[in-house]
Length: 269
Image (cartoon, rainbow, N blue to C red; front, side, top):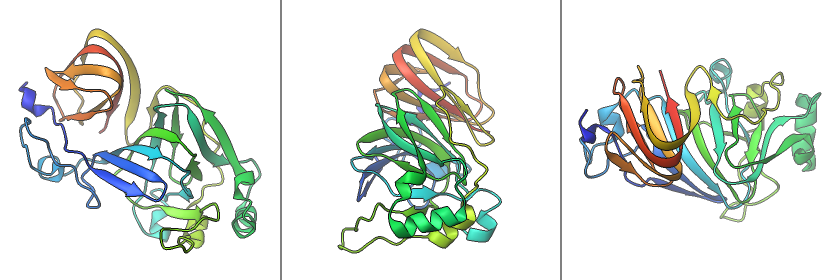
């Protein structure tokens, strides 16, 4: 395999009221990745190279907490509009997340909590630890807490319904728009709160963590393989991957890893 077939990308930052997102690997029109210099296809958008890339990979740096949100799934998006979004969070540092509604919570409880400003009472709060991963399927109510750093793998979608925003205002001094009606249509009340995991496997991607110390061969994936240096650094097929950097190995390529690092590895179909 040619070294240039390991794709690295130019920085792609998205500032927000609450902090920032680094869109590590994306073909979404709201923020496409561009292949960096030194790689085959340098200067091209990823959509020109792998137009069917089905994921959006981010690093989320929440200086303050995000709004309480829900995304549609394949079924509810036909009612709400937008694109379905199932995602996974892996903690890059210890932090607080909110994921799932407490048992017994229903639509009336949600509507009343939005109006009363007491929504936090309905949410399951997790004191999440570095290295823990949480599965966030479409339909699960969630939020990211203050000072939390997360690696996220999701379907390629930018559809978010803001259910509650902690009674704060936007940059213009006015409350930000809420999408309560669509949120109520998108919520799946049957979903339990997630439990911490190391690996996450779903219909859209397989995520696992590797404690790399030396060399490791990874079989080729029929889809592509996303690699991220959560801690330390490593090389993949001779290409250096510094700490907190993402690369993409295209479908069908064998993978040879070398180094001392905590590696996040995601394959897709």
